[in-house]
Amino acid sequence: MFYLLNYFIQMKILLNNNDLNEALYNVSNLGFVPTMGSLHKGHISLIKRSLKECKKTIVSIFVNPTQFNNKNDYKNYPRNNRNDFSILKKLKVNFLYMPKKNDVYYFKRKSLIKLKKKDKILCAKYRKGHFEGVIDVMDRLTKLIKPKKIYMGEKDFQQLYLVKKYIKKKPKTKIISCKTIRDTNKLAFSSRNKLLKKSELKMAKKISSELFLLKRKLGNNKNSKKLISQKKNQLTYFYDIKFDYLELINISTFKNSNTTKNSKLFVAYYINNVRLIDNF
Ligand code: AMP
Image (tube, rainbow, N blue to C red; front, side, top):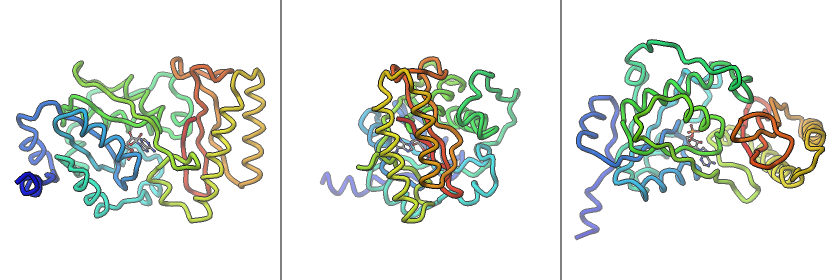
């Protein structure tokens, strides 16, 4: 009987705001996992946490055009709906929201989102307009979905920090930070890994292992700046990669740090045209 019941409880696919409003009418204790699809083990860990902690779970798949500062990057972003459906169905997610651009951007903002000067570091410095786009879309999705909890990954630590700081949410909506899921070489799972050739993926794994070890080596070493700069030069030379940044940042103040105390090593680099980010 239970098996039979389970068979009929299907994931609802919501393709527009009418579907969304109808489905969420009367739903409380809702967990929300925003994604851009091409799902992997990192996303799955967020979804499993929501399924465990909330009565119902909604996952969104929306490749948000406004957060891409490069048209080709948006065009080439990996998309794999068929595989995503099958993952979400297996996980027994209650709702999948796949809006069109007009469903999300159906109203014009009264005032532009502007980052404070002190927040314009790391990706905010190198990807102009990126976080303004992320904050805007998160603000809009939160308004539409009205979840109790939003699950986000520490893999995108700066995104998590800025979304917590800038989105206007109901006081009852909580943002839950979730640990980064990595493979055995310490490479974080990422949709962008799918854009790498086999040899490039191997390289990314080696770079992740090296950065993980560097963070350990830094400890309370007073020469952290020098060690980081040396490693950056070494990796650039050896793997022919291009860094946007490799910086130790205090995660409370979000300012440069000299020790690993309460700090993380943030990295963004390119393997050919593929930009990877992480923090250790
Ligand atoms: P994305 O689809 O890349 O926009 O990511 C959707 C959510 O999944 C974001 O909150 C990410 O931080 C999170 N995420 C992506 N990769 C990982 C990972 N390897 N471990 C944990 N969370 C992740």
